[in-house]
Amino acid sequence: MPTPAAPRSNPTAVTHEVTNQPPPLTGHDAADDAVLLEGIRREGAAWHLDELHRFGRYVGSEEAQHWADQANRHEPELRTHDRFGNRVDEVEFHPAYHSLIDASVRAGLAGAAWADGRPGAHVARAGGFMLATMLEQGHLCPVSMTYAVVPALRRSPDLAKTYEPLLTSRVYEPGLSAPAAKRGLLAGMGMTEKQGGTDVRANTTAAVEQADGTWRLRGHKWFTSAPMNDLFLVLAQSPGGLSCFLVPRVLPDGSRNTFRIQRLKDKLGNRSNASSEPEFDDTVAWLVGDEGKGVRTIIDMVTMTRLDCVLGSAAGTRAALAQAAHHARHRSVFGTELIDQPLMRNVLADLSLESEAATTLALRLAGAADRAHRGDDGERAFLRLATAIGKYWVCKRQPVAVAEALECLGGNGYDEASGMPRLYREAPLNGIWEGSGNVNALDMLRALTREPASLEAFHAEIEAAAGADARLDAAWRELRAELARTEDAQLRARRVVERAALVLQGSLLVRHAPAAVADVFCASRLAGDQGLAFGTLPAGTDFAALLGRLPA
Image (cartoon, rainbow, N blue to C red; front, side, top):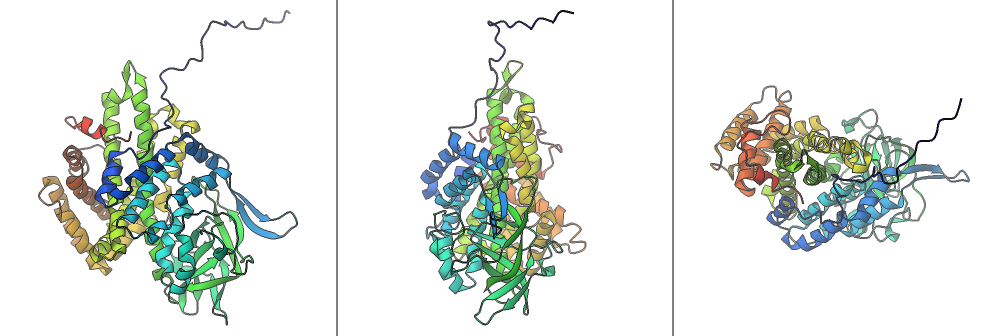
């Protein structure tokens, strides 16, 4: 039987000419975003805008986006021993990961805001943190914890005097060496254990005081991220109760502290960042704050990382929206660009509204944090309640918003090369880190019962928009009634915190957003003129106004 002839090719046929595909979203200024810039100005950091645009150009650069991709494709690797059998407990990262951290630390996103006396320094840092999150989230875990550790460490002035100047440095110096010999430090935390999780008072890690004033720890932590950081705040049981301790990876004399990394977690997302299970065995530590007051001490750190969770989720939502908008601007269907198709306009407008509400709330919290740290008691009280509310709602909304934005790209969005799958895998993270939804809903109840000043401050924030929109006024009346009820408080907590978040966002948008944006928010989120999915805004909506707020 004769061999079939090979198929002939036609050199004149064109089968790979690419049309109707968007160009890569690179080479732009990620800070060219009206919602972000307005929030930065409003919350007191207008002086930072030139630097924010510089960082935005870095975030939008092809090189930085390549680093983000490489850091997640080449995941960290654990080396427990060297080739001679010596215990080293080191994690190796791809060079791209170090490049990302270096850029973020140099931009002041770690502890630098604590050493900056200018009003708005924490808002400026928040803006940069949001841009960096839009680029790549995993490298920001050590950056966030370094920012958050400073107020907790200040409960022990001697330790703060030694380490704070290095934690607020803009120098990233990777590798394990004596902390005081480095030009900049990164910090982490070790709270949860396998038998307790959120219930940290069930921790079994034990601390024994030594004659020289140090302590020795023995125990196993369940989820300690960024194990190559220089310092960690760790909870352990001492004779006086659960206490907070400072654990350095390397001791002042240059010897390695006992920090045995048993394994790295195999996580859904956040793949560039290592999360570990360290074991302490005669590990040297220093007491931070008062003995037996460990939760009170470390909660200062947790509060700041929760703020970063809100910032990160708002930024993750905005990153997905930017990709969807870019695709819709450059893709045609049936002869019309996607962004001009009525149903796609509805979807993008609804996502834009969700994103603007999240971004505005996140930056309001950053402004409150800045003013609270400068002595404003009213802002401190507002921050106490509003952080729990914002952490619950903004983080809860990110996964569904990112999923909708991914769908705007169709099959292209399901391809790893688009970057959307990474955004989707990252989306649930902030809802879990530093307390899941239930934890934050219950924390809202705790603030209401134990710190009445926080409710007074929240009341004042909402009342600032009184009379501006009847739907907001009605929602606020209903919420006040819910807040006054005490029966079944825990059972109703999620309903209450959700409504509180929407009322707070409504108040902010009524006061600060364009009138058309605030009108649609109050109609859809407060008065219920919306379906259960994105893209269900009613006819008559000012879609042009909402689409005009899309990221560039």
